Image 1 (cartoon, rainbow, N blue to C red):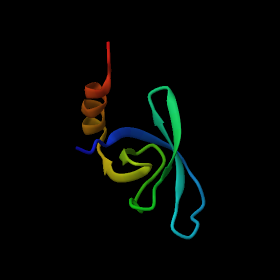
Image 2: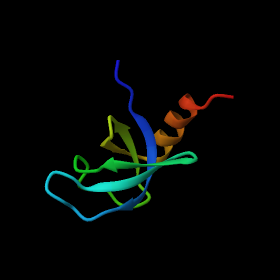
Image 3: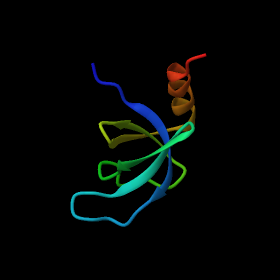
Image 4: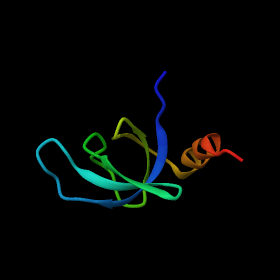
Length: 73
């Protein structure tokens, strides 16, 4: 089974051949993610990330619900 994790796009870098790297926040962690598969992306959007790639832009409500599933109390 594959799992995609929701995050918020904090910044978007300049495009290079085969990549558009950006910083995506996952709670208190920020990681470099390839945004090439979501050309409509903007800073502040929420995305689902799998294997280092943003695979889909999601609305805030969906991102919030998905984030709750990953929280451990």
